[in-house]
Length: 261
Image (spheres, rainbow, N blue to C red):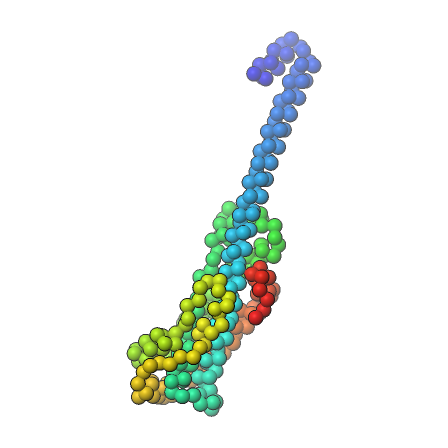
């Protein structure tokens, strides 16, 4: 209708009316554009709030997982140190304690990352909606950092793990898993981290069975060398988790609201 009116005014050369109609058109377009922009900004703010809450929750989980891995591998390292000492020139262990420490030295831990929110934001180009610099930068750093995957792969594929499982009888391995295996920790349970692997246990096996299994460990020609390599790799893994990416652990702790243990 407005175009018909403008055409009519042009035909009659009513210049004032033409100017008024033109102004109406311009203002209408401007208002419509502003309304669209306001709606888009409001929707972007709403998405940002949802994304920020989801990302913070994911990073609190990642903070828990990192603390768990550090504490877990420190316990594994302690057991590796006890076992290698007992097999060389260090403090002696009973046959049962040797089996337990040697078994725990072979263990590894893995919880998958929670990166669905981050991947969604990257895929949609919405990562820039996160206005919290620490939250955004921590996510960008963490989800591009291969440290946890490297630590897990090295532990799962360690030579010592293969050697120990190759020489240990199946029934002894079953008893170790049943009576001295890892305690299951619920994700996010910081308090449950301590003692999840290094706790007092007994194998409930005949003494001769335990003695024979321990003798296998002492007699194997490659076990000590593999265990010493495992010990060195564990020290490197713990160092990388704690200090490998400067500032990452501190930022995760700040996001989770926890200080260093």
